[in-house]
Length: 245
Image (tube, rainbow, N blue to C red):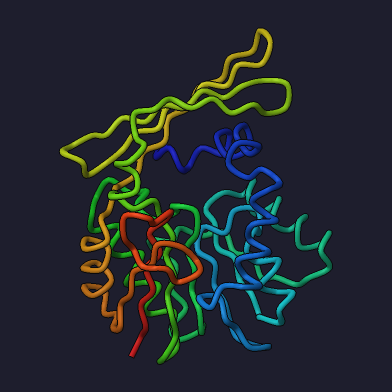
């Protein structure tokens, strides 16, 4: 079983992965970023949607939203979030390596470094090819990851995050000649200790651009943040956008 298939991870560390500030940040980004421009009725697919962090504000803007996630626990949280917000969303439990709805969407998004989960590079490319197939002509794919260049600026510094009466200690280890990273998390709360490890592929801007092009996307652009700033030494994220011809 891959680490991403463990629902105990998603539920046990949900406070770390999806703190309340993330929903507020997503609301602001969807409202203000040119990368999220949608018209009422536009069809949007969120791959690895988690607890509907971006689905809710996109639905509020009038988009017809679909969330796909492999975790039943995350989809349950997504359903609850949509109900609280009073918005409609179609939620599908599926593996993004296999999920295809030909020509069904105007925008596909994949947020918070939810790309690169798979050890086999061909499987990560398959995710992009599936997203390409899901788009109508002129549709866009938006992928948000921690770019290798940005990651290199702070990797190796252990972090401690206080959550709900405890502390989560995080340490990252670069593997396989800077192609992958393992993130080890230890949650200490009183006498309780909980541990998990996450693995993902690291991509530079050039590498991810090449994957987009190999999957059939044109007009590929790289940005350093959601304000469309350049991907340079001031970048906070690596955000890549490609268009289906």
